[in-house]
Length: 405
Ligand SMILES: [Zn+2]
Image 1 (cartoon, rainbow, N blue to C red):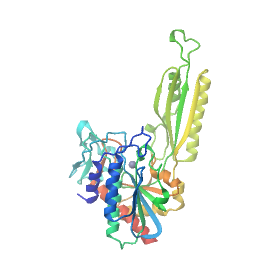
Image 2: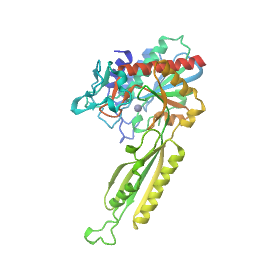
Image 3: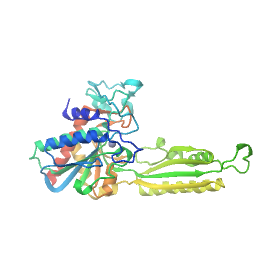
Image 4: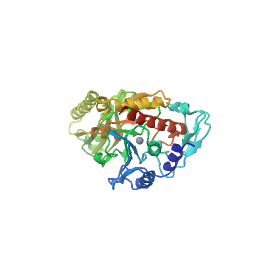
């Protein structure tokens, strides 16, 4: 087993799910279990300025390097609370024959659902036992960064930029950089190592807004409701039916955005509907928000006596325009992956990363692959060879920065 994969498996068994219902930082104290292991290992490697903050952000610096530019490497320690994350038991599927992999509880990983799995036919695929997620998102990224630090320290003569690292908590609950200290980090540019298939370097994310609806109706005994009941349940239903089905996630892909009603609850007296809006362009997002306002106005005129409150909030923004200003960040990463023998393309993440917010905090950040797929599910997998390719790609990227400085 290659050292990155061995390291990944060691981290994968440490339970680190974040908790969307907690207001503490980090959201779950178990994230410290892995952060403390990493803190100790970074110090043992000989990293400088190793610092674990009380809110669960771990920083360190690789000694040496050309300080004309400092490149940051970031991964998150938490795993998604959407799938069970306690008691991860990594399974090795060696000499994989390219056929679906059956795990416990009827969980099946079908290569046809994955864009890049067959690349690893004949190699080793790592999965959970089917009862939990695997946590490749993002312990693969952590393992790749840790091995990169170790390798840089063992090879001090390689031309390279300054290199700093940070491991963040709570990325999966959207709070990964809430307590991030950009000055302590000290990077001019950064890469999150939090992507999927090795064929993609991502240079943009969605623009993201939430649209939360509060509907107030009027409760009356149904037997004597004629002319006076205003039913918030009906209004919520009408709201969703006024949304465009062709704009929903199940009908959107590539660079298309979506309007996604993801939560509804209610009674006659009051109802709540949560919608998220996603679009790669600013103009597209303006249009999506305009459509929400048009629906609100339409509902208000359809249901006299109701109260309809729509609150829209920005969640994160697409850093694509920022990354276009200095192409080195993305171009060097593409070259680095190509040097590792991969036909790589620039892609768009249909979601957000810590990098979207960091880019707006002054550290332009692109996203590198890890080699895993089907994140946030019990079918999550990563290939031993995929980890190795992603590791080679990252080392090459730093070498290209070093050669250019
Ligand atoms: Zn992730």
